[in-house]
Amino acid sequence: MIKLGITGGIGSGKSTVSQIFSLSGVPVYIADVESKRLVATSPTIREKLINLFGEELYSEGVLNKPLLASHIFNDKKKLETVNAIIHPEVERDFIEWVKKHAQCDIVAHEAAILFESGFNHMMDKVLMVYTPLDIRIERTMLRDNLSKEKVMERIQNQMSDEEKAKLSDFVIVNDNTKSLIEQVTNIIQELKTSKN
Image 1 (spheres, one colour):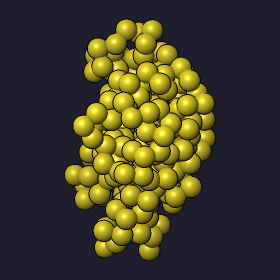
Image 2 (cartoon, rainbow, N blue to C red; image 1 turned 45 degrees about the horizontal axis):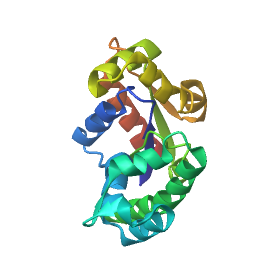
Image 3 (cartoon, helix red, strand yellow; image 1 turned 60 degrees about the vertical axis):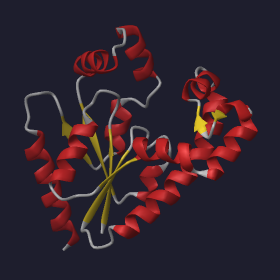
């Protein structure tokens, strides 16, 4: 089995690329979705976050997301501490998920912060979705209803595309001129060939 990491900056279209992999028969673990589920359901995460921020972080068993965001926004140390609580649980969850897909030739793990979180070390190959900055800004402004300044703030908080591209085995270009389906199909073929 080949474990493929899929990453890309905000607004790059990595979710679209992940959907194409999924439709092509490659199961995809979406780290963002699964980490939210784990933060809501994992007793380990809940206990550690309450120890850090107090009982009011969960009301009637439900995480108060705006309160958590207010604690970690603009506080790198607290954000790192929260990530150090959540990432090991996501890693454990991913390992269990992989076992359930043992019959597959390829599985994928989509994460915006694949390199920053260290999850790239669990992957056999990494694919980065590259999109020109102006398209990323426009997409994110429309999708999240944010100002250009807010989008730029988020982009500047992420690892640069240049760094991600250097660390990746494959780069998919998502600039509205090249077929994503064709690029994904070629990568799947290459991965299956390399496995034989």
